[in-house]
Length: 195
Image 1: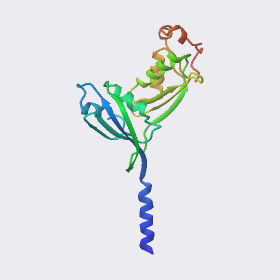
Image 2: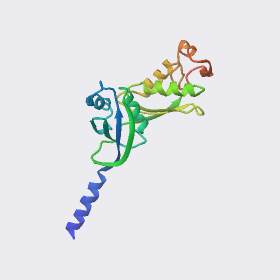
Image 3: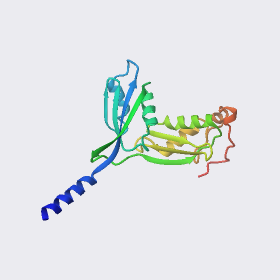
Image 4: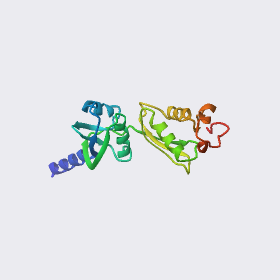
C-alpha cells in the first residue's frame, strides 16, 4: 500500500514537470549562400525556442505556445536571411523542465489613420531587436506586442515608433518625421504625450 502511494505521488510530481509545447516543422526555400548554421543563429536570441534543427531544406523547432510564437513570427525571423517557409506542419510536443516563458507583453496607444500606418507601425516595432510580435489596431489605435525583456524595453520600442513619425503614449515623433508621412497617414497629433 505504501509503495503504491509513493509511486502515485512520484508520477503526479513527475507529470507536473511537463510543459505542453508546440513543434513546428517547416520546408524551407533559401538562397545557396545561407547555411544551416546561419538559420540556427537566427533563433539563438530567442531562449524560449528550443530544439532548433536544420537539415537540408527542413527546419524543426519547439516553441512554448502558438500565441507567443505564431508561424507568422517564425516566418519573419527567417525572412531576415531571405529564407521562406513553404510548408508548415504543427504538432504538440512535450518537454521536461522547459524554461518558463520569458516574453513580456505590452499594449500602448500609437497614433495613426490607415492601413499604411498599420504596416509602418508594425514593421517599426518588429525592427527593434527582441520584438517577437506586433499588431496595431486601426480602430483602437492600440499596439499589442510581445518582446524579450533582456533584449529591449517598452520605452525603446516607443522611441523606435516615434522615430518613424508616429506619436505614442510617451514618445513624440519629431516634426520632421511626422511631416515625412504620406498625406493620408497624417493623424491629429496630441499636444503632448498622454502619460
